[in-house]
Length: 164
Image 1: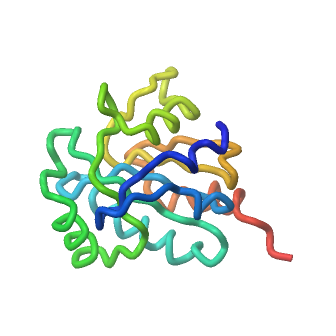
Image 2: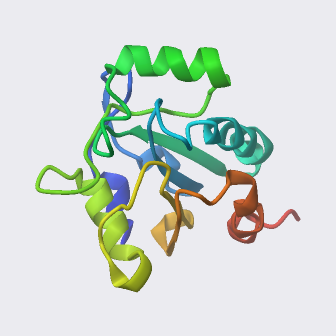
């Protein structure tokens, strides 16, 4: 994958236009989220990873998506409130987007191409599919929705800069 991932326009959950350029030298954990999914409690584990590794170079990025059984029906401000009140989420959240189909966000098109799913499938299977991106976009690894965030710690640690 090229560093072009950092130039893709994104919209924060507050409605601000941005890119991922500020995170170019970080390890990214990009997750499509939903508030009414059986995996929604993973927000707690994602926040724990964010808090544990943020100072070492990890950034968790949440991208709400309503494509899977309409499990993210609310608007962006309601999603942000839900995440903060129920799970204490402090990692960056972005505006609701599509991860599959003709309206799939370019970020997800790039991630899916870099890290195909089981049997080479390009589609995102369900909410809480996770993409772990090495600094500079050098590599991408895909994790299944059922993979608990804490089970990703060793993969994250391998990508973090080593302490001197």
